[in-house]
Image (cartoon, rainbow, N blue to C red; front, side, top):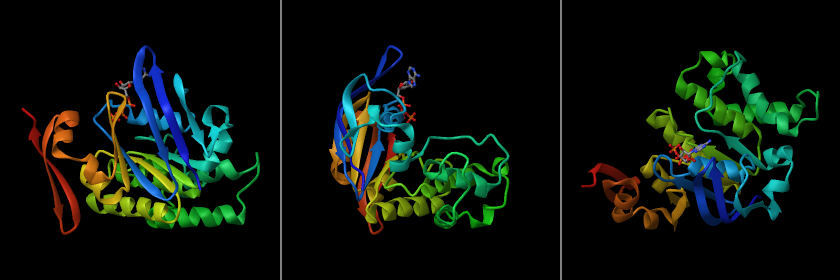
Length: 258
Ligand SMILES: Nc1ncnc2c1ncn2[C@@H]1O[C@H](COP(=O)(O)OP(=O)(O)OP(=O)(O)O)[C@@H](O)[C@H]1O
């Protein structure tokens, strides 16, 4: 189980204040969506949570330990990370890419143990890429590559998963599969944090949404409390239909707000 506690977190990049005074406690067993317009500071916030960027003020703690003082490998074992839009540069076989997810558990220069192989198999099955396992990673489509990288993050089998735009490049069927998978991880006790742009998916599958704008946390709560038409107008500058369908909530952008 992992809890990530953010206390008045601010991050500056260069001279720009990108995240300002964000406080939230993210608890195990929940799927937390981070939403907000382009440039709102979502990726910066998640990178700070993982200790990849220093905070300029405030503190971030993982299970009470300040991230700033945790060794990188210890964080990597606690929180699996699927970065935004990551490229694959080496012509590795897909299974070997997924196997990289086991690195945080391996001693230097040691090979894969049977437990590692089993975790890799589980991740390949869950990300629905068994048919790609023998392919060369650099020769995949954008959506196939995205699922391989998700499998690599799942192979860590960490108690928390942070996924930055895990739906980008996926077709509608695989978007649903991935949201279900993230929700299942949370039902199993994991803390799952996902940066999302699809508001319907966010509303349907997330337990809680953090809405960011201009580096600030504008709303934090149950999806349909956060996603009011007024707030979507104020934050995204859109007119949107917010409604319930038999399949769950639906948020349909209708146009730019006048
Ligand atoms: N290295 C940097 N130096 C200065 N500003 C930066 C740097 N990296 C990002 N920024 C700025 O910080 C702001 C937040 O960026 P961030 O990537 O966190 O936004 P985001 O909410 O994830 O956006 P998107 O939805 O477009 O991915 C943006 O205005 C961006 O231009």
